[in-house]
Image (cartoon, rainbow, N blue to C red; front, side, top):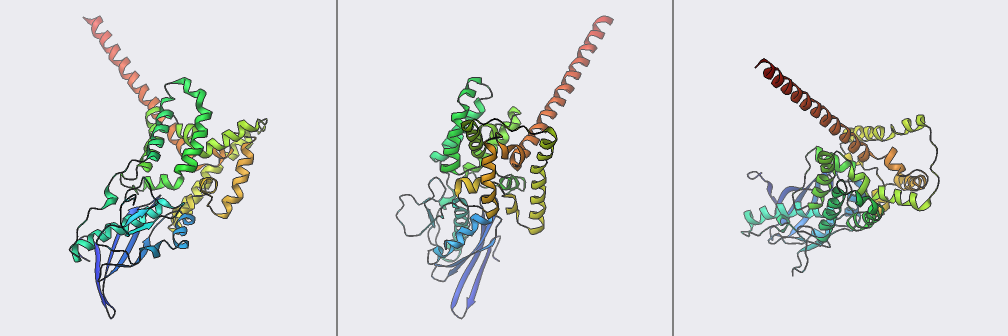
Length: 367
């Protein structure tokens, strides 16, 4: 242990090695990595010591030998990230062989590992190899994906004031499917909300995270409306578009059945939280269909459920959203609490105004 950094010198029969531990925020958790470096300043191995990412996506890093790609890279300069346009540390047109390619479909987790490794390398480089360099993962980059997300959230926000925008809502939902679903691959999930609650918050360089969280929660706080589900969510959009295109008559479900079905989302959410706490892995919260539909990667159970959700949406608009979605349940709950508190606050203000008016009238009559 050296200072505040978890760093070590290791003397072995094969020579001296250095090890350093550091971390970065991934999609939904803190990813902690240990980097082992030889006396020439070249990486021998990267070991993940702790992470809570969605298993089906993080396992892709191992399956595609992502960690093996760090071996032999130098710590006397940054390790850039190839194939990560718009992310900090992106290789771009930089001329260097000191880079590693992201794993398609797991870009955020790939980025978190590379960022954690670079943070540790920066320390080792300065302490033991007399080399200082600016960490490119500290630099903010604004990509077209960020701007597209911001524009979509602003249009949804404007819809609360410009009623004519409702006429383009269906077309807007189609844009959401293409942009947020297939191109940007960003959605609010139960795991993402938990990461915010547990303060697993990335740096501002991960602008997409802030747009999602600040935008979706901002709708509720500022407007008292859950506009994320109504205007932004790409999976909700897919269901609604399918329902409109099919034009089938809606199924006549009894109110008793609807009441029972509405208990499904909070029940599944509670079980997922309980299992996550017991197992120490909140990947159980990622039982949502986004990965299967938009990234073509998910657990086997979701592959079985996805066709059912889509089929039922032909007859019941937003079937999954109404009865299964944990995010919709949480957002609607927060929205109800917010509006109830605003209502109570307004009543208190009105009472104070009435009392003040009555007091003024009483003083006027006495005078």
